[in-house]
Amino acid sequence: MRFVFPFVALALGIGMAPASATVTTLTFDGDICGADGAQACGNGSEIGATHGSTAEVSVSYSQTSSTSVTSPFVNFWSTGYGDVSNVIYAGGGNVLGISFTPVSGFELRLIGFTAGCFQGRADCLSLPYSVSSASFSTISGTATPTGVTADVIAINSPWAAQAISFAIGPNMFNGAVDNVIFESRALQTGGVVPEPASWAMLIAGFGLVGAVARRRRRGLICG
Image 1 (cartoon, rainbow, N blue to C red):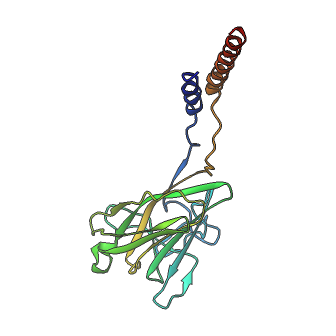
Image 2 (image 1 turned 180 degrees about the horizontal axis):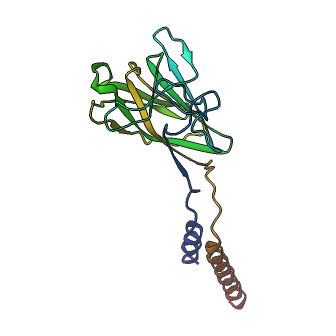
Image 3 (image 1 turned 30 degrees about the vertical axis):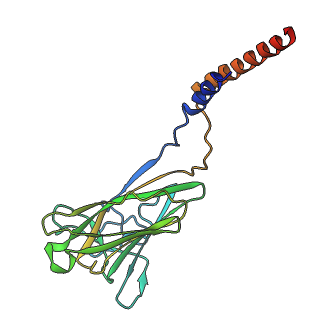
């Protein structure tokens, strides 16, 4: 019967891929400004406080000034950041923050973002950033955009069922962020249900187990 168990194990392993995930690219184009997040944007406008939120992830923003006063919004600017446009920056602060909170039953991870520097000014050519969560150790680094090209940063954080906080700065008056990519999926609990195609293999495997057991019983009786 030693050949039966690998067969059953194979059946259990087929069709048990993780639940599909949704990838969201957070951009700042279109009518996303104003208190309702549905108004046309002009340079310096405040974007909607929850812009980019989905059915699976709640998104919010902040900017922290040199006096540690946090505001629940960030600002929009159209051009001047090299090869990216329609970006967000901290109009009244040094550090720009974005918080991603999964709704109950979901988890998420931060894939990456793009950082720009306004006209290549000296104070935004080096922008420290951090990604933190109660679910994993803080990830940190430095974005180095120029006046010609933005810096595309890959984060690829671990999955988290708790909020992920992204912060970049100081000097985010001239620095900016665009194309923030995150991924969300149903919370993985360690147990998955086989796909329908696997059930046939499972049934066949367990049937084979029963057949072998019956043969052994008959052999014992006859002996």
